[in-house]
Each structure stands twice: as structure tokens, then as C-alpha cells.
Length: 104
Image (cartoon, rainbow, N blue to C red; front, side):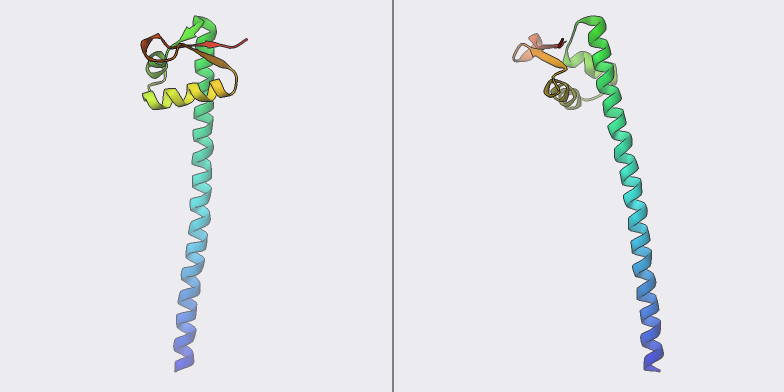
């Protein structure tokens, strides 16, 4: 009787372990896909910023917020990334007089 009980508990625990392992793989796959989609969206938004700069010559953080319907922090992050990549440069230091130009 004890051996049967141990066997049943083992089967249950094994099944739970497999269920968690399979569920984790599915979650990891979904998370990977989500992160890839976010990266594509970020790259598309940064390209929109560069395209607008080609047409306008200069752009502000506020214009980017309105163009992409994003927050101030996200616009700043995009601009910082583009500046770090050497694609744009910031003109001005602080406030309403800051704008960005395309490099080269």
C-alpha cells in the first residue's frame, strides 16, 4: 500500500514538474516575441524621427512626442539613443531652446 501511495505521489509531482517546465518555455517564448516586437517598434519610431529631421532640418522633444504619441521620457530616451549612435546632435542645453539636428 505504501509503495502505491509513493508511486501516485511521484506521478503527481512529476506531472506538476513537467507542467511547470512546459509553461515556462511557453512564457519565455511569448516574452521573447514581445521583446522583439518592442525592439522593432523602437527602431521604427527612431527612423520616423530621422525621416522628419531630413524634411525639417531640426526637431524638438515636444514635436517628437506629438508625432509618435509618446511620453516626454520616451522621446528623450529615443533622442539620447540617436545621439549616442552619432545620428543626431543636440543644440542648446536646457529648456525651450533645445532642438536636435541630423549629423552629416
